[in-house]
Image (cartoon, rainbow, N blue to C red):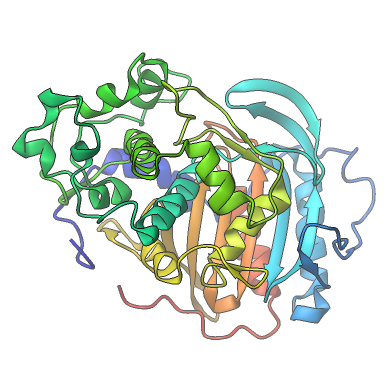
Amino acid sequence: MGKRPLKSLCVLTFSLWVMSFARGGLAIAAPVDASQASEAYHYRQPPTLADMWVTGTLDDVGLDQLRIEQMTDAIRRHPYWSIHAVLIEREGRLVYEEYFAGPDQRWGTPLGRVVFNRETKHDLRSVTKSVVSALLGIALHSGAIRSLDSPIVEYFPEYKEFQTPERVAITIRHALSMTGGLEWNEDLPYTDPRNTEIVMTRSEDPIRYVLSQRIVAKPGVAWQYNGGFTQLLAAVIQRATGTSLKAYAKKMLFDPLGITDVEWVGDLAGLPAAASGLRLRPRDLAKFGSLYLHQGRWSNRQVLPEEWVKESTRRHVTFPNQPSRGYAYHWWHTCYATPSGLVESKTAVGNGGQRLFVLPGLKSVVTVLAGRYNDFSIAPWEQILTVYIIPSFHAQPTAGCPPE
């Protein structure tokens, strides 16, 4: 598989999941929320707290303050965008951090209107998948997981009926790149009980449910978005390490990052919802994104293996109909066209507008949290990135997408 485009593609699922990418440049008309837009915003430096973040000003790192203020005013004027938080890191310093108000949910349960601040935990939705990818990389580096080419079913010997040559061919690598060839349908809204991930979540035996899905393509040939693979990978991590997924995440990832306020929702036969259930505070999510800008390091400590950071965010799947976009190991890979050339983003993506934009060429990470759950009609987070943030860099270095 490697760097070559896949031979076939499940276009419907891809179209749904990248719709929020493709429509990012649309102009958005929406009513003004007078409570948030009563006066022009004036930039303020994020405070330095006891959370290991080094802070600085936009001017310190060469970002145009006026353009960032215009972005903030636009968010406040357009509540329909449902932006809850935006944070910007550059060169290891947190230089922008602002919060807004709007309706939110906790894993599908409405919370009403929430006035957000840095202490407010937020659904990450499918950004959770990128966290699972990180944990798998740690387990692989430690030797607990032998190889990405190990068959998934080897970790589930109790399901003897699935130990067939066709299913043995599905490896951990295939699950990470979502090219395992199982039938899966997340095209339906997540409010629809026929959505395959929802069926899995409600199943008494989620692992059996995923493993039992019909094989519709040879592994490594067709890409299909599949949260069931993430649930399998979470179980593999738990079984390989002999530690619960939550405890392993705490010890190997959250504690080194100084993340103490974590909620991982769901109980799928003893595992949390690995595809969508994690809830973190905004600054803590930004720390996770920072690992991918700094080769896996945080506060002079190697938290993620450097090679895994590179490999797990490298494009492994290229979409023929969208050559600027691709899929890695539970990360997305995008090339944004800008007046100064292509800008590469390694992006963790979650339903509703949860985004970690890792911009290596600009030495920056942009964290966005939002509340447009199950609404793919517009993508204001992409407009925020491409219309305001990227152009705010006074001197844009060469940030082109490398050939894959």
